[in-house]
Image 1 (cartoon, rainbow, N blue to C red):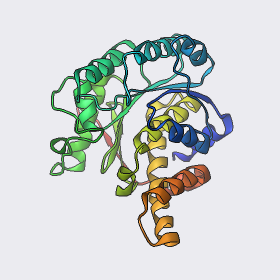
Image 2 (image 1 turned 135 degrees about the vertical axis):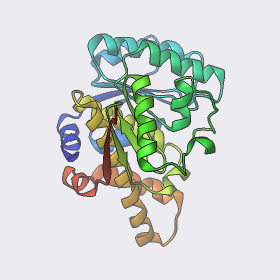
Image 3 (image 1 turned 135 degrees about the horizontal axis):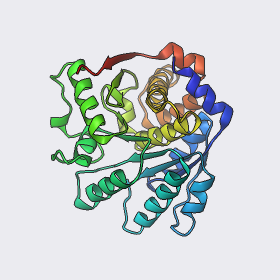
Length: 280
């Protein structure tokens, strides 16, 4: 079902303008190349509008936030909005500090975002529901371990309606919702959480998928999440086969290999998705 979106991405090879955090910039660029995109990581405020105008998609990640980034975020985002270019926001650490929360909210309120990629704590903070982020991970009280899958899907759907855009909320089970339909996606491996940057890589990859298929943002974002999860699981299997150990450095390399080698047919065959419709 979702493999067509990976095929479209590989056929089109869109330019993706990433203003991302300095910790994960290299991995984001390589992940984009692996799935078929073409990265450019320009962040000087004097050129971001020109670069965004050339791009098929723009990714804004506030991971290593500095005040001087703000003009770059808004400059690229506004130019993309003017040209109808999809923008993906990763509100890293929203809720952890006032600067992060206000920056994320400002970008969300001003820019017509194609998608928000985050964890549940960050999304709740972005929407003003209180609580605090736990680093870049969801706060323990936000994990909803006792809630059923349907209840969690309904919660994400409600938040997506408030956000008025597609939200991709990652965790033990990933959820992608536009408020009307919610995809619950199983996949990945816990080792992904021990490699810095896997969330940022997913945000960049989501931007590439949306650039290639902007007319179907829900399905396209779900395809990106499925692809990352499937590659995470496959990389772990290869890691055990090849090394017999769970080394995070080797895993990081294998994850990139799997992203580069994944086909649309394999993505179709590896989906583990349950779709929930809005009840009311």
